Length: 167
Image (cartoon, rainbow, N blue to C red; front, side):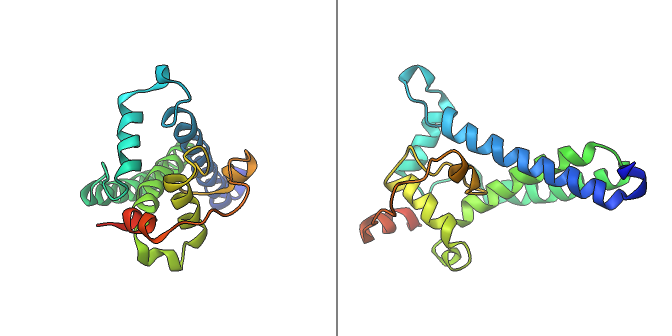
């Protein structure tokens, strides 16, 4: 009924649902697979992630990857529009992944702190103080919901910030 009577609303909610599902997957993947509690849970991906913790300015995703993801995401949205079906849910998921790659890159840039202060605070806390806290990158609400935020705001010294923002 909603699909035929209110197609824009139908696709908006499908897209939004896909994006929200992505943020949930991102949080849990980061929390449980990239930060395993035991040595048995370590994988090549989790070891690459740990390397990123030690070298925050080094990324596996290049600018070309991010541009291609953005273009692909726009193509997915266009296909979803043309198909006018549940493919919109997948385009929302894909958009979530694309947004994650861009946001993660941006929160490692000092100049973005002005318009993403909470993301910076959470991510610096995760990288530099509490590796078992603040797993959300695209959104921070899963950390709040699952109580993986630190008790109090940790102090971060200038040397740590220099390492985090290093080019």
